Length: 253
Image (tube, rainbow, N blue to C red):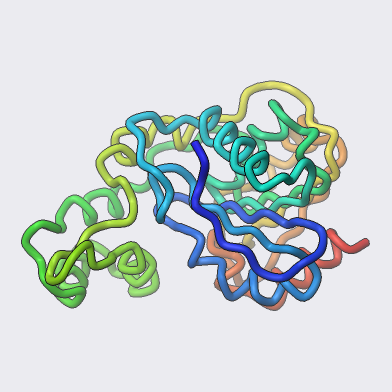
C-alpha cells in the first residue's frame, strides 16, 4: 500500500511516523522546523489520515507500506522518527528491512506488549454518532463527558473532516483500529537491531519504565535512552524544545 505523504525542506530524507489515532498533520510544526536540516517526509499510516483503509492492520503490513512508499519516492535509505504506534512500526521495519534505515528515533514506545489502556478513548469514539452530526461542536460535546483531557479531545477532533457539505466523517478507520487494538498493543518480535538508535521517553509516561531499559538495550545494542522531564506520552507536543534538541543532537552528531 502506498501511503499519503507530505514533504518539507530538502537534503537527506527524514521520515516521521505518527501514533495511533494521529496523522501527518500532528507533526507538521516539527517538520517545518526540521526542514532547515532535512527533507522531512510525513506519512499517514494505513487506516489513518488520507492513506487508504484496510481491514488488516498489522505491524508487518504497516512496515511493508513504508517500504513500498519509500520505493515509490525513490528513497533507499533515510533517518526515521516514530512515535508510539509509529515507533513500533519503525522497530518492525528495522527487524525486517533495516537497510532502509540510517539512524532511528523511537519516541515513547517500548518493545514489550501493553495491557489494554485505551478503553476511555475507544468508548468516547464509539459514543459519537458521526452520521447524525453536522458540526464539530456537537462532536466535542459528545466526547466531553467521556474524556476529561481537553488536549486529548482536540487531538481526536483533528481527525474530523467535511466529507461533503454538512457531512462530517473521521479520517481514521475507527472500526478496524478498535477491532485490531490487541495487535496495536503487541510486543516486538525477537531479533537484534544494530542500527544507531535513540529512545526518547517522557518522565511522566509509563510506556518505557526503568525496568524496561535492559531488555531494550539487549535488542538494540547500539541504542541510547533519553528521558525528557515534565513530559508524558506526547513528548514532542508537551516539551517541544527539549524534544527537538534531543533529536538534532542525535541525528547531526
